[in-house]
Length: 378
Ligand code: APR
Ligand code: ZN
Ligand code: ZN
Image (cartoon, rainbow, N blue to C red):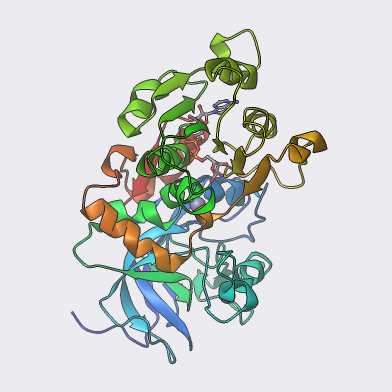
């Protein structure tokens, strides 16, 4: 095939013209990468709640018209000046959680945050230079959190991607680009769950099931899986839940139920994987005194607050949280190896694989909670 390097590529994309309005499939133009950028042929892209919040403009304010999407795998089509970490033909995962290796946050071993992440959130739909690489019908199309993967090609800035091994199946790997990694890292990287401990995972979507896998991997003795949907009982057990609890089947608050089930000791670790304020309170309440850790992984509506009784903190409970499971993009290839060595389950999470043309329907199913993970194909 003739090289497209240096040329504008015309390709298919789902364009969100206005906040919350159905997306349409369009031919868009994707400009070549500038210095310290790469252009990637997107192979598979997952749907994540952050795309929904961006589309609705409720959490991350999307700038419209835009191409949403940030959980994806692809092949490097061309690289701009100054890119040394990948070359044409390399396989990569998109990362909305960047790593520049240079800023004070990247230099800290205690955090996976990078100043480029904060800059990207504040960039208002452009890349760092204040422009976009996308257009359609003569109009500027904005990027979504520096990614925009609901298109056949995406331009990514240095640090916003991770090279992965070529023998890993791209249609499964895209799950490690956001959701599953976000859940898995909570117990593995942030809480560092200890063998034999008691864990509780609130919410058994793809993120929560990622957390369940992380707890199991760390050798947790007991893993409560808490969900208001009884359909999650079987799938939860498949991933490692030892005790499924549906809060709606009890007359008392779920934290009291968990206290009773642990002889009033409480859980060593709790993980909130929903983004529900009341559930965050329950997850903190259900932690054991003296050393229990509550990790917030789900993303609540922006601007919301929780009330914390300082006594909980004086009694040495830890309340913490993380984006992207506290993991840096450079740690993701190890998760790819885990999948290839059958230590991490991804196939079982993929419930829907529609073509990009069905994207609005796929968003509806996600909003209705009828999917675990949808992977779109072009
Ligand atoms: N108590 C228990 N379970 C609940 C409750 C509740 N009050 N409310 C919802 N759930 C369950 C749902 O039944 C569902 O199984 O939580 C699960 C959430 O799963 P998904 O909607 O599939 O969400 P997921 O993709 O896993 O993401 C969860 O993480 O990254 C963030 O923005 C994302 O906040 C979202 C969260
Ligand atoms: Zn995401
Ligand atoms: Zn950085």
